[in-house]
Image 1 (cartoon, rainbow, N blue to C red):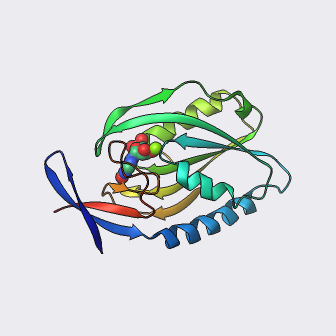
Image 2: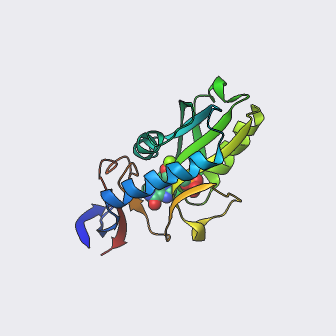
Length: 184
Ligand code: IMP
Ligand code: MG
């Protein structure tokens, strides 16, 4: 189903809905239960939200977690338009609360794996009790770095996707569904 067209840098794209709002809600609920099963009931977990993309996913996921949960965030930036710049920019420093605690990184999407690879390396330097990764979307065919997410919402192909937090140059994060951009 094509929902609408986007013109970006003089090219026209059809936006095809990949996951409806209802499908996202259902999967995120199940994913929260998969995560709950991997942690002790009473042991605190710090959820580290990767801004801005994971903000909607994290808000829904956290409501399904049953262990004592802290929330922290870090902002990473690597994309310009629909392509990666090849460098990852981390704004600010890591929260101090990660040290000695279980850390669950919550990310919107793993593409090349560059961002999450760098983030995991940095987190390990501050000595957490454990580090795990939950990502809404994973593009396994696009990986260039060794990254294995512990919890994956959906595996998808290589096309650029928008909505439910994911942006095209800062826009379309508000779409309640995830849509794939297909050149028209
Ligand atoms: P990576 O470092 O190549 O794995 O890229 C990860 C980051 O790039 C994600 O956290 C997103 O912010 C952004 N990104 C990668 N693919 C897409 C996409 O299809 N749509 C929107 N953002 C994306
Ligand atoms: Mg992101």
